[in-house]
Image 1 (cartoon, helix red, strand yellow):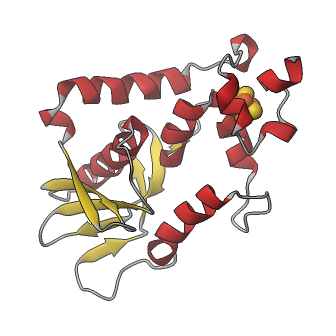
Image 2 (image 1 turned 60 degrees about the vertical axis):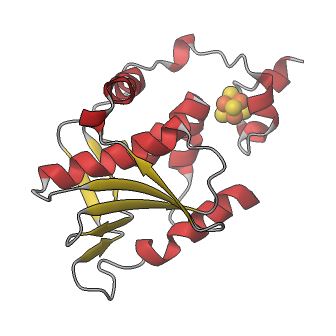
Length: 188
Ligand code: SF4
């Protein structure tokens, strides 16, 4: 892939399927492409923060665009409380804490640190059931930190030329399948 900054959301997309990053990037801010209910729920979880630069509560950053120079990542902070140092990434409902969720909050964490903020705690918040999942910081979880750096390297070195999707179940539940020439379903 190019030297263009990676979107933080691409870390999660890449784990599902590298090709989905391409389709995701085609989506405009107006969400021209069709979204399934899962995606709409995710959009809904962030709609308040994405529309605001700062929340009404003083010292809380919400939806602020950030750039992380170290990993060449761009994206948005979901919620960061400057006073407590708690960084929170909200999801509609968290049934499993997927690695992709952790990579996303790591990316926000490194961006804030570069900006000079002190981040004390990382949290994933499941809105539907009001559950908080505390995430260890990268320096406290060597294995996850190495996985985070590896996935960024894999994205930067990814080539469509050698790619073949072998997991048919992913294509079966992929919203981009009708448009995708890499789909396993097209080989049936
Ligand atoms: S249809 Fe399959 S190969 Fe294409 S983007 Fe979706 S999961 Fe990937």
